[in-house]
Image (cartoon, rainbow, N blue to C red; front, side, top):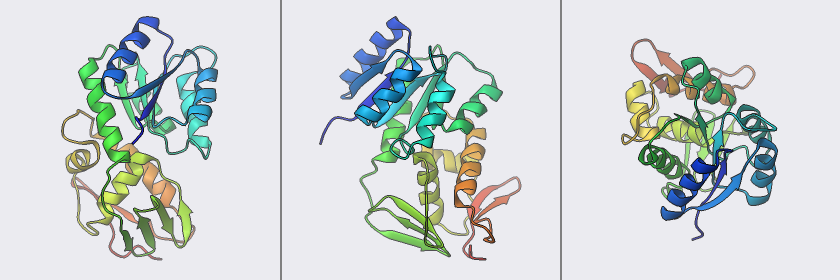
Length: 232
């Protein structure tokens, strides 16, 4: 199996050197971009398995790069971890809403970054079940890694796919934010519970079909569940 490729979009020379050294030692192939325009070009040419994307990039901001990657069919599902010095909650939520799968604030420890990266890679390469699961009018095909609702293909990011995969295996069961964090992000990293709300919102939006019931039920003070009957 080929080594996974990580595109590092970062303009701090010392940090690039540190990231390349540690990522290559972990078995990743590293491709680097020094500005936003180059990041978009290399994303198309190299088809990376994951993107480490700095918020403050020359030419084109990391937020705009993230937005454009999510708009392109060939990079829509590539996991993105944003690197930034911005630590305020509003900025974190903005990054997640733009399409980032995770968010790490500088300065960070390399062990924390690698743990986040490994968790994301586990989500997109689970190497597990080759079956098809249906609940109501929602169908999840693990072989093709596709989701359909009422026969229409639903485009999900890797985190939303993993979230749906977990919920659809337990229709009707209510999961707390903490349980979803453990199941989707893993228990070995720290992610704020608010992150679950952002990704649930994105999953809801992706599964939205005119005239169809919202398949995800919010249980106040408890969490979320996928309704057992999600047809109209």
